[in-house]
Length: 310
Image (cartoon, rainbow, N blue to C red; front, side):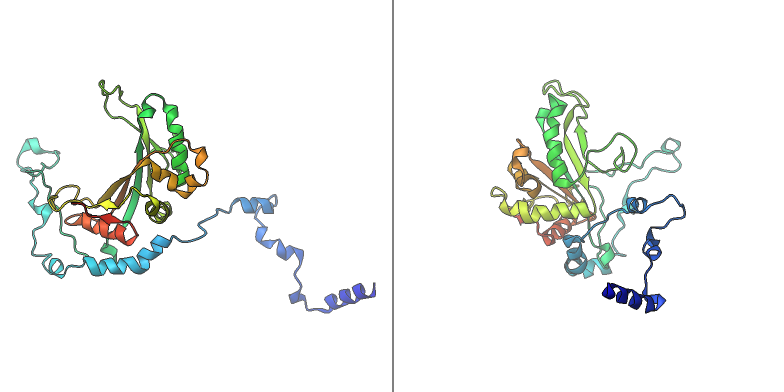
């Protein structure tokens, strides 16, 4: 009893600035309304990302410098003004023709579109990874839509996205987020396919989820896939002005056994009785001449393997 009384006297003799009252402790939870409580304050907190993307930091700190050194062409940069502008050579309707009013411009002659000559002179002009589209088509969905449920569960575990909702919202129609059920555009009586029938699942990844999917793909899936030797490069006879060469989109496919190598599926493989193959489209911002090579250089810096086939 004497010790407790001595402690009380010592606390009473301390300066007022060093003592914290209960009212001060509850001050961060105070609100303008008297009916609010600390629980209401915690409900307004939105959790954010706990760590930064490793591949994104790798691009900003290392890969962008290497790309600027590799893709810079002094001859293209100095002769940019002397080279013809592709937009000025595109055919146009005569303004004196009354039938050409409000009509779209005519297509250029031939099967090769006019493409610009890109010049990379600053970090802002370098090609970047815009999105990754993952798509799977299965013939079992034609007989019953319920056959898409295992595919939806696998895609939700791999990508972390939820199915797209029919109602307005962040995952509503037209938002570009979430898992989308693809449907056939035309009917085919020989294959017993009707127009609008479900054919598979597609998802478009952007931002952190895109880098997370690519990191899992190049670190865990592709190195352990025995039947995958690399993304095939086009042959030397492939035309350099074709739409696929100037689009900057790198596409490749994976067999069904690759889905079981994702850590989200491998940890509970018995929950997924069937695995599916997938088509992956890596969309970059590279456009014009040599865009396909620039997109491959970008993905190669992220760790994607490429192989040259004869």
